[in-house]
Length: 264
Ligand code: CAA
Image 1 (tube, rainbow, N blue to C red):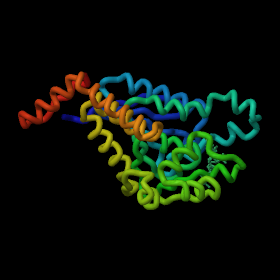
Image 2: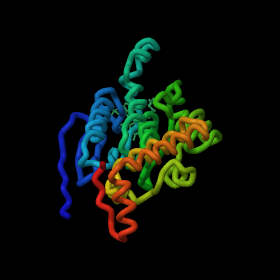
Image 3: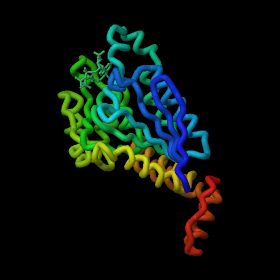
Image 4: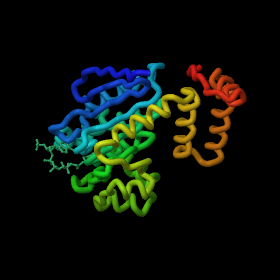
């Protein structure tokens, strides 16, 4: 089948669709893709739109080869008071990523710092270029991560390394990030995005409802105690037997043919 690619214009992001993969590129090159409210609002709006689009199965979020994102926009926050920060919906955007049902893969090259690193950590998988550098440098600004970095980094790489990253601006190379389990794979800078899109296309070609419930079940591992997580997984597993795709998938196996997924 010929590749079908379309693109749409936004102010701070570039949005493309390539067959069943949605691609969102952060596009604030003059600010190293720093994340301000309008950028996060556009990003979340498109992710929600993709969630509702049966023609799409998986999303890739990327930046430029030089910077995935240098973090929250420091210029937006520099003079804010505590009350203004509490009233600002800005950091809520990171929480809202939790409610995206389809898988999201971050394709990361260059700087991936602060809120940018927290955005990548809030995605379901990370494909990194060899030049990717991960860090939470908020300590240099007299603050700590506010978009989930302390929690997700500790879960991803363990307490000891997370402490160094958060308290002492320790930055991880792509190879270190791979070794510590932060990223799924590392590729050369000229192919990391294609790798991420290929991974997304593979996932987007699978049974859509099972993919969404699989994402939900794995994420529960980070929310619940083991017994509650296991109970939840069993419920989601059993629920999939009400889908046509489950019947089709098992029938296709027995008939030794490829399954034809309907997302129903
Ligand atoms: N916010 C706003 N603008 C930023 C930015 C940010 N996070 N990061 C970079 N920029 C801007 C710079 O101000 C500069 O703009 P001007 O040309 O107008 O001066 C432009 O992007 C290019 O940056 P540099 O000249 O600094 O480029 P560099 O190659 O020398 O360094 C860098 C790149 C290492 C990423 C460096 O810019 C840097 O350290 N940036 C800040 C990283 C940071 O502290 N991130 C945490 C932010 S706080 C946060 O994210 C809180 C949270 O948890 C949600």
